[in-house]
Amino acid sequence: MTRRYLTHVVRAPEEVVLYFTLPIMFVLVFGYVFGSGMAVPGGGNYREFLLPGVFVMTMLYGLGATATAIATDLSRGVVDRFRSLPVSRSALLTGRSAADLVRALLEMSTLVVCGLLVGWQWRNGVVDALLAVALILLLRTALTWVGIWLGLVVPNPDQVSMIVFPLAFPLTALSNVFVAPELMPEWLGSISTWNPLSATVAAARDLFGNPGMGGDSLVAQHPVLLATIWPVLLITVFAPLAVRRYRRLSR
Image (cartoon, rainbow, N blue to C red):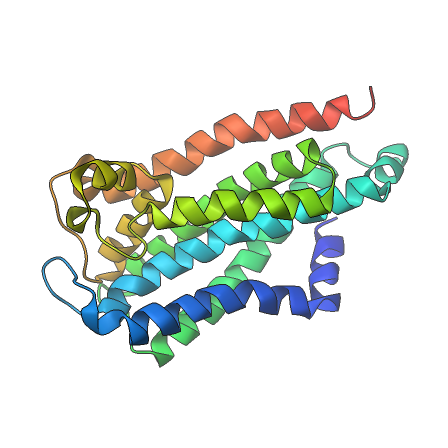
């Protein structure tokens, strides 16, 4: 089942290109057009501040591909056909999760290369950099289960795409992806600080050795801990919801 999903990616490369276009556009626009006017707490290069946020933002928008693929299989009756075959009932969901993890790893590899080309780099050694990538992929795994649940709840692919972007864009804007919470109004900064994306972005910046870490909030003091707790919490909530919804399809 994992191979099936990955084969679809190979046969529809335009989908991958589409999902890469947005983060690369944000790097170019914010890094080069607005970058000179952006402030980084404690000083530092804004593009180095920006890239960890773009890595995480790409993982967030990837859940749209997950939800759409599941909804497409449902609308075409593919899920019903698989359920009638002598295969594991969990294969459809776990296969999708595994395929998304492989895809996310490929996306991260490409984005890291793009980051290096625009001047970004990690400064704390390979071990910390790999740990940062692992936390980003952990968040992607959590978002995959959110996407699976969404695709099962809203089985119309067109409706899924209309739901994901209006939810994902505010979640990205109200985070520390583009601007540090310390530079926002106090109430907005509080929302940004406790955004699940902000925890992973803060942890990635800390582990990569990029600028932008500051403040006395819990996220700022324990970024790696919060970047672990949030994805685990999301998986704990949405994985059972997805499995329950999947089981109810035959009723």
